[in-house]
Length: 356
Image 1 (cartoon, rainbow, N blue to C red):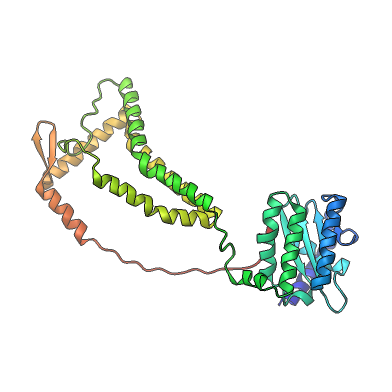
Image 2 (cartoon, rainbow, N blue to C red):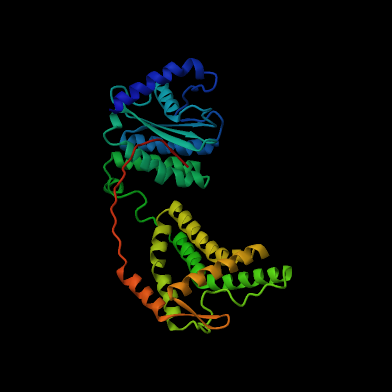
């Protein structure tokens, strides 16, 4: 399958040469680093060459590096195949060449593997070398270290090093959780759980004051369906709920955010969205006098409907309280609720060159 893919890519690349020759041209080979734009200094090229020559002695891999500024829109797979075929990397009849292509401005990379190495360096292994050895150091600006480390891993893999083989048996990123991201996400959750209520109260108070300054005739003393509940106190039950939420879902937030950067971003974004809604929704009725009057009209309609059902009664002029029938209906609805679910799964996959 790899031979067929290589043949197809080669044919397409050769067919594309007349149209793309002006945009991208493969230079002559300069052992073992081809760096026409001079991204590496002379001493850095020597360091890479020494590492490649050492790998050649220990693992019989004939490695080379091709560094370009940009691919000019060319697929990196085409560039790698064209360079590999033009330079005829590896020993004849052994086909042990291994080419690393780096496109610096495009931040793309690819390992092109000779036929003789395909049994040891699979697509999964090459991608692991790019993602877990090359990419981190390229992101930090250590191009030489990225090249040496990625070739070094593949060399150990070809030599059947047990640790190198074991890396392919575990999921990518296992044991590399970023706990700092996990604790940051947990901290955002703690702010939402413990401080959303006082923040909401302050925002609501500020909105009320602003609205009352616009229209002094407005009264804010009657904003709940029932008005005789008394002063609520935040007792032990309230603090227990907050503590429980800090642990669960707190633990799951830590684990999820530490698992990957994408999960961290999604977790923090979801938590901040919840925080925003908890603060914004109660305050939006104070956006204007007209909106607040519409809120009072809706409140009056809800009271009338509940009084008609026997769930609310007027204890005194302007003072309302829930009836025993209301509390009984709440208990009944909560005890009879249930749920069921069914689901399915989707699957997909593939392989490609990598980026950093």
